[in-house]
Length: 253
Length: 253
DNA sequence: CGACGGCTTGAGGTAAGTCAATCCACGTGG
DNA sequence: CCACGTGGATTGACTTACCTCAAGCCGTCG
Image (tube, rainbow over all chains, first blue to last red; front, top):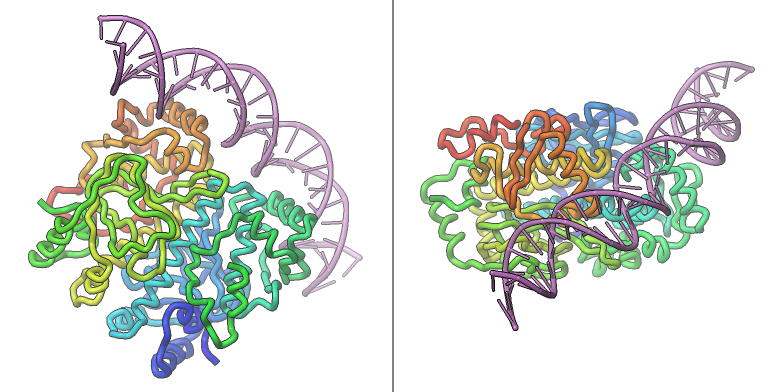
């Protein structure tokens, strides 16, 4: 059983059994656990370690001096919290746990070594960072040019695809244990308005939300409402995977 | 006289004379020129070359099927247009020239070599990409949690800092030959509303716009209105530079 | 049971969008 | 040298998407 980070990077690269073992070892050496509401890393920190999400849901966010909060990205298992650690002086934003979250710690110095190795690790890390860039750009389009309804549809569809890719979605349902207030902070609207947009999506028969499970009832129409185009996720290889983990992600693209 | 790319990366790294020469050579080998409105690279392209802006003003943008356009970033001399080229299959967005723009072309394969070399080039490229991530995140905060007035103030202040860093701002004035409609596409508002926000900034005595030159009349207040915090630009080294190029950028931070 | 956090609903209020006219700077051709 | 055309800036009147404030609801947990 492989860890989510390796699985994610294998979207892009093929690792040898030894490489996988190295990566698996890295994921088990040191671990940490964060309660909902805790910060995994904080703006201004310069931790000696990188954090990789193993389970749970986290988010990148910033808080303005007057208390307004913006979530810039959701982090799901396999995501790297702080690529900046091994180059930049300090974090320019925080990463917080939204649910109980487990992370693996990797020494920054160890990361630097991986970059130097003649394996495909360096390229896989580049791939991860470049797709992060793509996701952030799409979020800017979201905020700048899509209305609240489309925005909500877009982020939900994106989460569906991302959960599919890591094999954490059964059919079109996935656990999304998030508060409407957090969703508002991510989509740049009030909790009240987030609520209304979710209601509209339900009324239109596009999604259902029972407990903490979000089910996409009509992926085709949701995708259309969102104006979703998966190219920015750079899942080029998702199609030709044989191991059954994410073959269905291709349907959504 | 060094090229803007080298100058930019020296914000982060110290290059040896030989390295500088290599970089300078790369910048002069092959060049291209684009008229305003032209695309330098288009969504879906997979060019064999990377492009580095040498002069002029360009932007990353996406156009939605219904014609809505969002500018996600401005590119000024020294900026790399398409880091994705040497890893990803295709561009997920376009880069267009807003003014007459000159770029240097670097073969993707040459870039990959630079990443492997035991110089600080790889790290300098990481630094550039990681700060791009920071800028995008700040833009998301802009769009999600700042109103139109603050947003306009923020982007103007950011451009002032960035132009200062590359030595292209005299005091608090810099050439910003951009249409109000483009500014609207970048800040996520209508051209009409962009116009009104600029008017307000002028009325408040924060900026002046004569021809294509933007002058910041009251940097301190502009910064305050914008709620600007420079940490996301990661200019840590700007302070201890001795060569007189950007020592004044420190004032703004 | 009561308290609490999160969800839902309603009634205004306001920032920003829409539409359309006018103005202004410029470049071009007669 | 002037008439004209064009793209961008400006202005005003009206509409609307989203926010604000506030109350009520509902499930969970001590």
